[in-house]
Picture 1 (tube, rainbow, N blue to C red):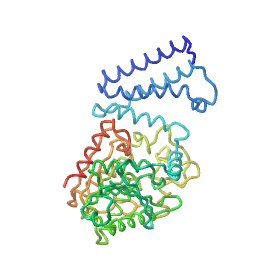
Picture 2: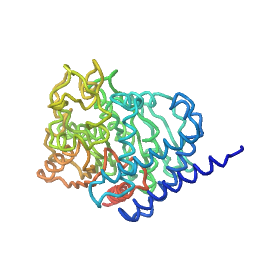
Picture 3: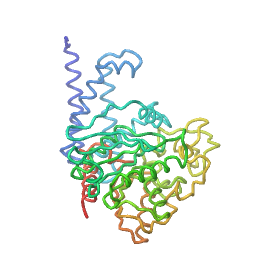
Picture 4: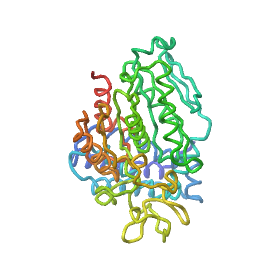
Length: 421
């Protein structure tokens, strides 16, 4: 391909500006050398995008090379400035800030606004997965009335007798009760197995809204738990993990098991659990404009919202989710049930008799107070519970890039929790 002098000069100027900003940001403001990796990746992505067929789809027209270059340079500068201005404290890593603010900007695109992100996630989960277990693992699909997916190391795949002393990670995925099991959680199962020295891992593909409303997902979680125990694993060797809505199902499941006098898991891990469907916690106000996923920002939708509960609206009439003539997100699963029901909003329950618990949450999350309330109530009831709050982090940040220091530290704590006696 013939490259003109003009293109070479333009690209050189772009690279110079881009890396000058990088040097300023990394060495004067934050001094995080690992940030160079992010800039190389961003630069490569920008250049590839400017020459790809997707650029024409994005711009819906033909731009000259220099116009594309100018646009990408403006994007780079805007992202840099946004990161600098939105960086709350020096305790927050640059990469964590960069990822969070990049996601905030992505939410401004039409396909990410309102419910569209959830709808896209739900549609993606319904497509056929091509995920395959790596060498040394066996990946099995099981139907015990509820679809389950079991990941086992080949050395441990030898029947029920060997399961009596075997560790198991039971993962209840998130997704606002509307997104089904997807490859992110299959990767998470593999990650958990490796950090737990080869423990088996099970994912549940519970029924989701709006086709199936409360208590369908909770019934599926309980059915899966019964199958796990009947299949030979001992409850004291089982760690149950739940993020977001999955954290709600995990805590609600344990409430029912306790109330019915049934066996409970040995340990539980909650990542950014969504435990208060009434939205009445303090962070639903204090973090309303900080949260990049559920808060109010340029990506949110304004509407009359006659069918939206007061706790899901601001005084200006802005809503946390939803589009015209749509129910709020909480109603997709809760339907017409009482949001103060402890099996829908576990923050209103008591947690005496609960197993050892690790709770992780970001301080910029709308749901931060859900985790704090869970911790405070469990601690007051004598539960061995640990709350870890990560400054400036966003919803379920653990499932993003491990080059982000906060993500890496969170997984170290998770591994320590899973392995300790």
